[in-house]
Length: 251
Image (cartoon, rainbow, N blue to C red; front, side, top):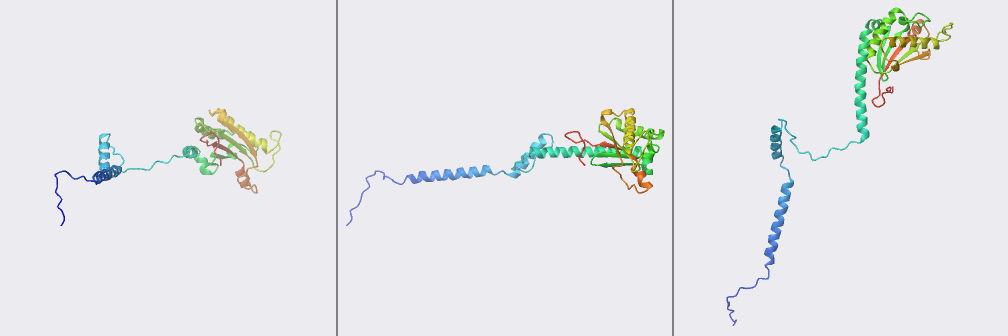
């Protein structure tokens, strides 16, 4: 028969009390991660309300309504330079286009008759004038009516800043005179006559240059009178400027 064990009233010792502390620690650790997760998530709806309220308070323009977590890429220096160059080139083309329209309007009667051609290309604006409008046959002295036409062109170019090349061109028929031994001298003398008139109209000398090409750059065949007349011309080339160097735009 088993003997009864009497409680003497003293508390019993528990050897698993550490489980209570461990459970409390786990609970606190779980609560910590829950809080960290919660604060890491942005409530977009509340952010939008706060953004609109701040925008109304500071000038009535709402801030961004979405959270942009992407970092804007840093553009390389070469890309920035090219973008700036392209923008400046675009503005230069627009400026040259306006100049071409002004020249066409000033020379409208001659443009309609085919005696003058105003074109725009990669180099700038070209005003091509038939030599018969400017000079007598085999001569390089400007006619009175030609001076009036060129002074109107010089008036437009006087306040401009672009460089100007005046080109003299002839047909392939040889010329032999005491004044002009060849078409080279004749073409250069005609270009120089136009340059002198531009200077007299107030165009800066440093912007001007005279070039004689003789018959080396024809724009039509020299096989008939019409083609030869087309090749006898003076071209006033207003050069577009490069953004960096201020030089001529490459064709």
